Length: 338
Image (cartoon, rainbow, N blue to C red):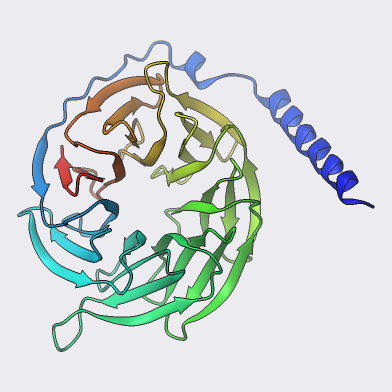
């Protein structure tokens, strides 16, 4: 069987799946939420974190809801105390081309990676008191787009080589390669139970993976351009994606469907980052137009626009207790909102 025939068969099977999904899609979320009033939010900047000298590319909250880590093109990884806006650690990186960073749930480690194709792990709690590299995980054949700790012993990564990988940090070895996307994998988000995760890719699809067997169990379509951002809701049953097609979308794992699309004629730029509020009622999204738009997930209407940055909002996150939102920007600043 030739390549063309296989491609045609794959396309036909994909169409079959789409048709089957349509058949069982008996209602739309917007039809079921007519009686609910749209929420309006007013969030203000409470703290501005100043310290980076160049574009901020990534941030991640610690599990304590107080500390966060940010990565910048200035070649620094900074750990912040969001209550005081003070720096706790400023970690010089070997490569300034950093694209992602993450905080371990224990608070003991942070990790980052980017165009060096490595995932570098730093111990914040050394006996000497200084922060140092404990591991450099090498194995991807493309840039590191995202990394997320499962524990102090295991970390997940996604890469421009189209794969995701699970690593044993102690041995420095890749334990599972998760292969299935047809384009660069740009983002991942761990489920609250830690057994599954979702990935978003330049192939315009998102996939639900089981970490235990390394298999992709569901694939979700809907976007028309690259997916740049992905985030689970706290219930572990829904997730949101943000794309270069200027829309965010919400998917439901149980019904295997897209249930919401967030965008409008007034928004014509791509989305860099997405995060849900603790309840899931609100979706925060960072845009190339320097703003963070806030969406009512049930009504699919905009609840607020956060205008505080002077360049692209490149990353954002809601802390574990749901009280604060942090946005990071190419203007070199991070801002804490609530």
